[in-house]
Length: 448
Image (cartoon, rainbow, N blue to C red; front, side, top):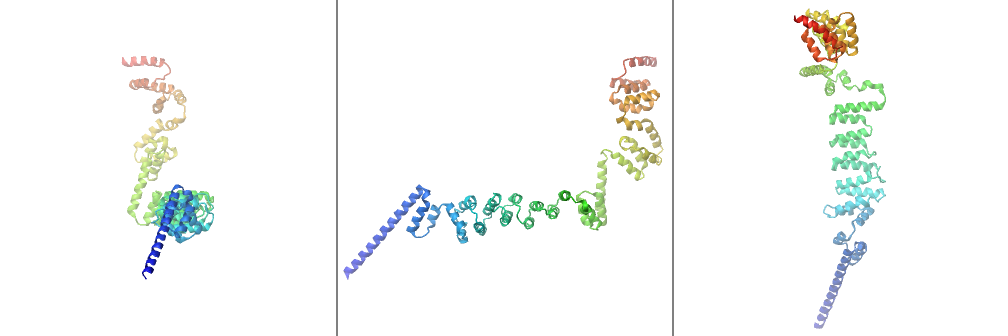
């Protein structure tokens, strides 16, 4: 009995020692193989096979350290196992980013099987990785690959960008042409991407929807009007031009509120005032009238504005002001037939005499000044001995320092030595010094 117990203890001890020695040899082999891996990563697959045989199980520690990430992602893509994808793309996996980089850079672009791409995209969506998914899809769509024209991938790229990074949406809608424009644009509007939605509609010829986005969401009537004009011109069909005059159509159809908005945005104050009267917004009508008056006041300084003033005075029965405006601004506002109609209706008799003086002094010559030769005019009036009649004309054109004009004017001023002296001092072109000599006896005689 005692001998049997001793034998059993010996046997157990022998087996334990044997197991310990085997475990020690196994550990030494593992350490040796690990050392070999650190020396050369090129032996990774062969070393992994040996470790698997000895351990007979997958060890996460060795998978992480010994597997090449490119080999892993190629394995994942080919096997299309969503559960395995979920394990690899888990947020707790510290190597997830390096794996996704390998997928985007090398592994997936090598694939030509649509099913490989489909499963990979589903895995990224399931793992809730919108940024990485967007990078992956952009690689397919923007880099001329076999999947560049894939409608589903294009839609998914833009929708993912809308969700994850709105700043990239505009770039993504410019190059792809095969996505579902109406649906994508509607989603863009719901997410506040109005400019992007407008560009989508514009790119795909949805002009009506594009204008609606400009008016209803962006709120730019000017851009909508400009876009409508360009679209209408490109259409090359003017048969329905009356249909595009929206503001007037709204007014004629009794849609005064809509007409008010349109007229207000294009600053059509006259039509706006009419619409406001129908809406019984009388204070706004007064404000609109003030705007019209302000525009008229600003226009007073514009070229040929005085012609308009004369017409306004005439139409409103202010004949005195109308006639004065025409005489004061003859170069812009004068019209002979109209002046004759107005002058007989003035109430102030003094204006008659001003009109007579105007005809005598200025009317014809002042109006023709820019186009006539001053020397010839002086010769004509000198020959008729009527130089004093054109004194105002001579004064107005003496700034040209014309020799004939200066001499004629100086002859008129013989009795006005102060003005004559000023003329000699200011304008030096005279017929000759004999002119001064001829004047000297007159001055001497006058001073005696």
